[in-house]
Amino acid sequence: MIKLIAIDLDGTLLNGKHAISNENKEAIKAAKERGVKVVLCTGRPLLGMISFLEELNLREAGDYGITYNGGLVQRTNTGEVLSKQTLTKTEIEEIFELSKLINVPCNFIDLENIYEPPYPKGRESLYPTVMTALPYVPISMEEVPEDIAINKAVFCYTQTDLDEAIKNIPTYFYKKFTIMKSRPILLELMPKSVDKGRGIAVLAHLLGFEASEVMALGDEANDAAMIEYAGIGVAMGNATVEIKSMAQYITKTNEEHGVAHAIQKFVLN
Image 1 (cartoon, rainbow, N blue to C red):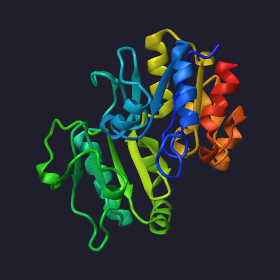
Image 2: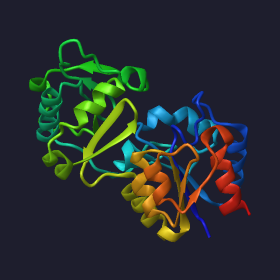
Image 3: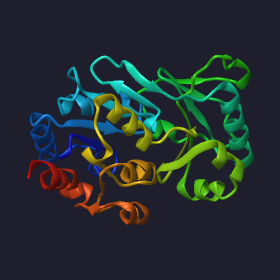
Image 4: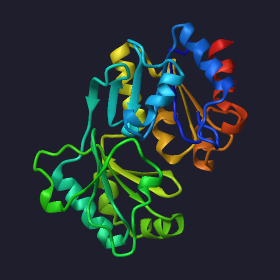
């Protein structure tokens, strides 16, 4: 019996217009009415998905969200942090040096701000086209406080240039950090202990649920860990080949209300 449904946002719950279809809304509503925990699981900060939570009535007491790709587990009604994994100043200094090495712009994000250290000449970050929920704060690396707690770093640039730059990332960084693409133009870097699967596992443990009682739905590389963790891992019809290969079930696309289809099949029926 499924007790927790973890749902990615972009490319999964949201259609190409970044909207939630009525079919998906109704299925989520019906699942919640049956006592199933419905949890949005995203790389965004909590503020970046507030409108979707409100639209789905998922900001009540007892509702949870997994943000920063599993780096934070939070209560959605208060923002209370139940679990947190962050990057240190030393680690973001390493990541910044990497961004210079591969010639891509870098941003750091905490709970309140998106920081803009100096970008490579002529290579402005595209992150403002992706994330608008938090203010952007220009900063030099010398100004970064010693006790800063960064939730993630991002390299956001044109797909062709970013893909080429990724080829030049030394193996060392993959050993030290969790590095994954969440969009064609967006590479995310987080503490090694962070991924969506671990975030869901933390929440499931807090709620007393087993992995077999979890269904997870996603479409991109940053969803792989939760697809593997869940008792029922569901890939969207528009998911990458990698995600489809590891899923137990492939549902319809995000344009065809694939989330609703999976909820109907595995939860409501």
